[in-house]
Length: 219
Image 1 (tube, helix red, strand yellow):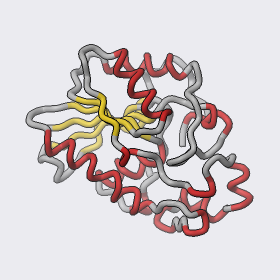
Image 2 (cartoon, one colour):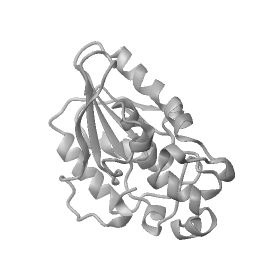
Image 3 (cartoon, helix red, strand yellow):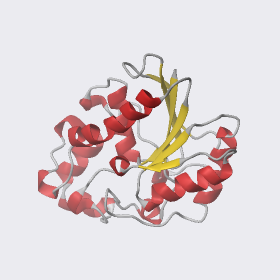
């Protein structure tokens, strides 16, 4: 049995401002995000982890390193380029309100109808391209696990929603059936057959956070 703990990075300045960051945009973690990372570490501390994998983007990498520093043991942190957020092309850096005016169809389908999402006009990445990029990371993690390993994967809200739902066998049209993912949440799945199938244990768990969530925390 292999258990995977997917963590969305801590909240950033652009999250607070309602801006798309994507695969190339980035902004610093808010100071209070480190308190939330500590909350997450306290929740995860009783468990043992073999490795932490992280997107190379600073908001994810700093979350992974801060989490590692607060967990017991010397957990190796592996940075993997394939764990980056969606490439959102021209939408990156724009406020959600600006995107709604300039690219209403792309925004609507990205958020509400992923099977119809066509990123051609924004020079972005499709859902199928993202899943094809990210799934091999998980396949490799599971393949090298020799026992009942537990692994943390730190990445991004939209990317993780698509990745995890694809692993659960969810059709593309229904990727958001359980909603999005909040900053510093943990979503847990496991496989008991070496990655042939995956089972969801907990989606978007934030009960351990010491702050109430607002609409800017979840995407």
